[in-house]
Length: 391
Image (cartoon, rainbow, N blue to C red; front, side, top):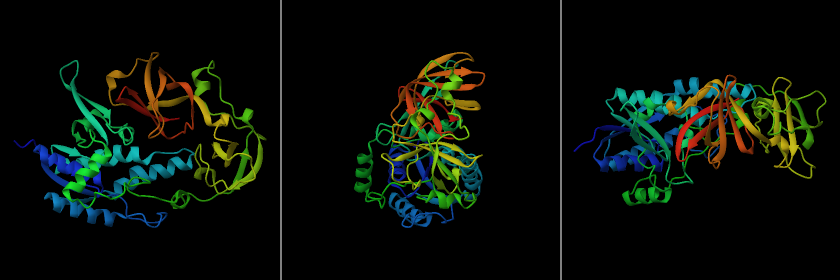
């Protein structure tokens, strides 16, 4: 019995290829749609596969699986909603996550709309995560987004901004599999993607030299690199208020000493080591702070420099998002969750506080490299409950 029509986002990678095959085996009417989201090559590293190569591979897979394939160009929406957002965030001295934005704004918005317009009941991707449907208090379905079965490939974090409406139409066929099993299935089917490397770099742009890429819109601006002593960059202690614990250390005139120059503070991010070009130190230098207004990059010696660690973070009002809205604590209340502030970071025990000044996450242990503009995601066990942009 046919289970409905599914359009798979066929990317030219092994995961979406196997996803399409699994759905076909389950009895779905499967079609494929290939997204073109980026045409430019400026800043792209040589050797990275452009979309033309991906499309060629996708066509070979579709032919092998005997499913129809269409192409949709979403490059206009991608530039407006993802790339322009990236430029704006870097210019403010913040570090965006284009992969999270791409899923929220493109794959499960523009692409999903294109698929539904073609008569799809569902949209499937090759993400390593799982979806579970339960009954809510009113009897209506509630969709749970769960971590992928392969802990080394779990991609739930990248979907931390999805809504219940988007999850309702989404399928993740490979989420219950380990990566080696996915490749084995592709090899058994003789798919052209079986031994193809996983894509890396910015979603749909690929590997880039980030300063060169950003210079398409952001101009270089020479400024000082200032080294801070360990005690000059310490954050508020645990006994301080949530606001103080979540705040950056304050940049004061004359703080530290100049040890070099940089091409623009907006080209750097918290925790960055490469690109500073300052030698002669006992330990490597890491970026611990960025002041784009004064165009100063602050650094500290060693990966254990106090300036790299913060006990808490804040999500500004309007910047929090709940995949399970009913799980949000009331104003003034708190709840325990497991949190991560970057992809593949081990989940960290924390307390989430809802306050008038925003949402605060106080970690049981100080976290290294909390970066404004990135996303904090919070889980209950293996279920992703919500997320927010770090202030």
